Length: 169
Image (cartoon, rainbow, N blue to C red):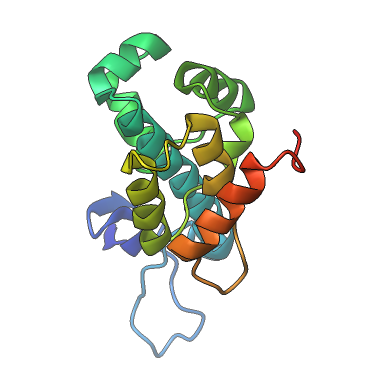
């Protein structure tokens, strides 16, 4: 038997069919992973955030998926699955990817900021007047405030703080 599983993007997938408890109701199909939906969706969300962070930093470095997969000594389809959150990733692999991209593994684990925040960061990074280094961008990239969208001015304040000699890493 088959069902249309929303977790599989409406593609047909084999499932275990379980009859309803009540005998008067027609037979219903239940996806075998439905009970794990909350846990799986949270895991998928985490993998997607990590994948999008990998994609962001890969593109910033100027790698396409093919050249990046060659450096990673894997196939391009693995990189595509990784960036789309469709495959798991070990800490060792995160560490290796971070090394190739020249960033901290922590940066990959924090995921990416909201779309508006990412746009503001990229605008600042590309602005030659600010001459933001990759390490400074990495620190700015990991800034988060619960429930708040960070603005360009906020990032400029953090940048001036980073560049002052008060802040030392």
